Image 1 (cartoon, rainbow, N blue to C red):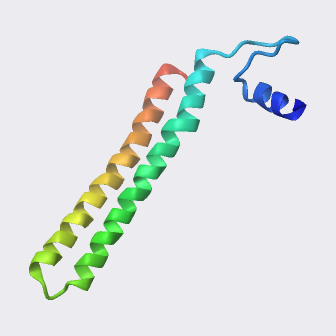
Image 2: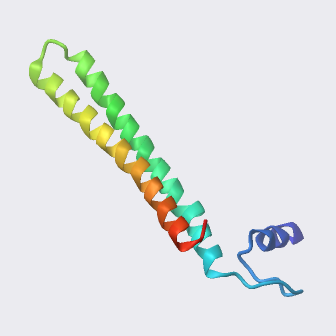
Length: 103
């Protein structure tokens, strides 16, 4: 149990009753970014990559069917757009954090 308490204190999420500083707004924002936002961006980016690969598979599998090839191409395009959006979201987060001095 003491190990868990020390780990929480080391992470800066709980004020140390023995002495030490209370958590700050910067700590809260950093924890939200690291524990919620960044994993969500990675998850959505992975889904975009899978969507792109699904489009490639449909495009290759249905080489003779123009309608299915067009569907596969659309999946690939939306996958690329999704990947770009996820990379941009990560960059925008870093720009905002650097502007606020929270980096």
